[in-house]
Image (cartoon, rainbow, N blue to C red; front, side, top):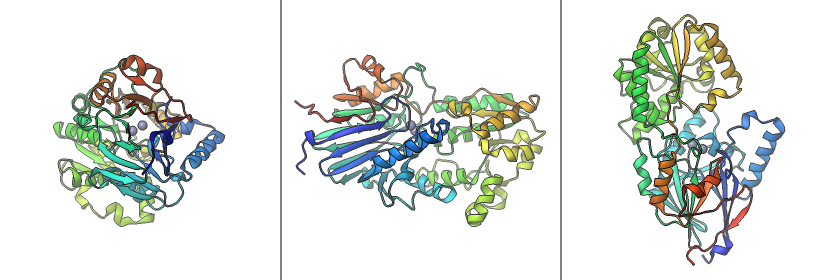
Length: 431
Ligand SMILES: [Zn+2]
Ligand SMILES: [Zn+2]
């Protein structure tokens, strides 16, 4: 390979001045790769014309792309992969590949149209690049950072990262003295120290104990394994059974096969499965062995039982469950706790609006309590720790609304403020 750094450039297609929707292109003499291909977080609120334009742009970026490196399975990083030409190569972690496979069983199947690869021993050589994967702490299972070595230059892409989760210490494995660090800055300007997942668990315990006679509905992501464990442990500590849907049961089953400390419906008594009407109907049409197959009858939880014994359960909740709630929990005392990014509650989606109306209908029975949550993203002190560890020659802000604050936060480092769609030639930082 004869490439030198002058032939190499990067283009942040999206993410230099916004949170989510990341897409970065790396161009070398003999290849072009993309890092993530995410859907903007506000996509649903855009006009049909803007949505069409977003998809058309993604198709342009994906055209002639030799491979996509997918950091984790969140829509703002993978959401436009569906626009990739059939057979496009995708490299990602084992865990992300598994989540894609499960989504294929329960919903959109990207595995049929994309050529998905995982990293053997964490490193691969692909055309002009040598790429190393580093698992990091984030709210998506199997999230990773990537180191790209190309033409004598090194670029580290943090992906979404935090230090206050259960695997926070992993940042110490990140490579040091890289030329470029693409660093996410979701929480810049928010100025709060993020609490730990253990603190989240303790808050759940307090909540379930304080509202003892109520059924608790908790909205959180199945793919946030740290949160699922915190919720499960809080149920265990308060004598409640955690009820999950079949998709979540599959996610936990897989996670258990990699990390056998993770609770599953097969191995843990106070985990049961409920069958949401919409999901069950859809799966029965596809393949009923998937939805009922792996679990015994004793593991099946009837939502009618939740109405009769609300104090026994915590239900992993989705707004799309509203139809089931109306049918079974019309006269039950329920508390809803959101354990997700607060913005999801503010979205103008029909199911959120209907849910709010349902809660407001009988305030004497139904309460929306304050959120119990911690961010999937590093707070300011954690970002500084990451930079102190990596000691990059140059920091490139990404996944942030405040790229201009990086210069103040990291005064002894060079910060390269890119703008979307501006090609940047790699300079030889060694000179
Ligand atoms: Zn993100
Ligand atoms: Zn994420």
